[in-house]
Length: 418
Image 1 (cartoon, rainbow, N blue to C red):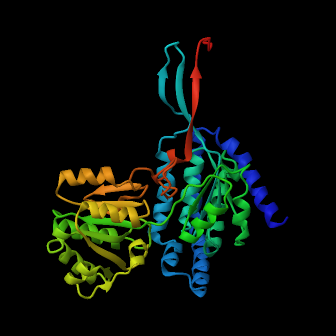
Image 2: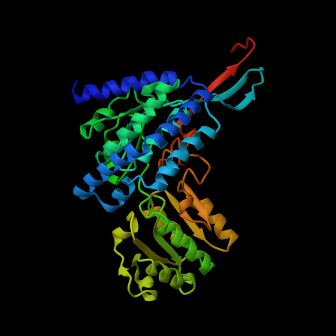
Image 3: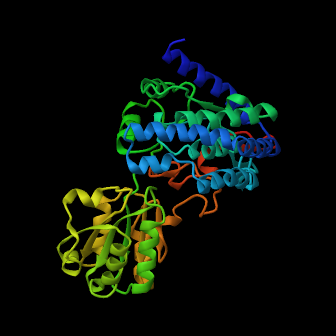
């Protein structure tokens, strides 16, 4: 069959599988998760070889350093991936849960029941661990998933999917609840985005180019998992020691991920208190600083910041730094340049902390903590499908409930609308 027929066949098989997956019990889905974890562990050596194959090809092709880092299935990523399967198995199953029950004056009981979305297509770059995390969450929430990873991770993704589908054959989950697009042809994405009769939701995870193509082409509703231009704001009362630790953890913990710090905003009254210590620590860690004029007064080696630096997602050892007059100016900066991802204030002022939480409407907003907490694992979701920057339906780290919707359920004893 040609490419269009191939994608249509995958979409139809996933649609059929979704109808069966929606009716599985929690025990059946959890059995698949456990079997998948065991099979992946047993196949680790083979999967590692496929990942090495992808890494070698990526190096020959000159893949950007952040994407190359995301592509590698390191020991830590492997551990988190397997742990994620077991964590999801231990999470309460949202399907069938009735919420918001009320009794109308005529005695009719009205509730809302959680149900799966159906078929979810996930289009992503690098990060082969997404293959496992997404499959785990989609199946546990009663959905089928179609995975289209980047060409740079094809062999790793196919090896992972082989074990996930084999686990389905060993349990009661339909094999096509997990489908992988087995081609690197970019036209496959266009065909996938036109399968609106079979696919209910598209989730793109990647750079601006991928997000733009998907949102402009799709006939299917899209939840974007876009860039992470994350901010930390050092308020006038910021404790220098706390500020330094938070900034360092936010920037250095894992620079190639979307919850990493990209812009540091500093109240002018913290310019001579917290900022020098923070900049010194960043410089000692090898971070290139791109600062405005007032930042460069404190740290002369900073590169003069340009307008485009304020909206850049560096995903590497570069940080933009700007001194602002007050909290209002920090809020205005984020509203202009931010990506609705994660913003943190470091402050000793309860009033300013509350104002920050009220006025900043990014998907994750924090007080006196690292931006790294914008993560499904850390927020108790188990594995995450990603971090949504779309405000409709799901916003922020997206776990099981984000992959469901609610239907109305009515219980009566003969009520008529008269």
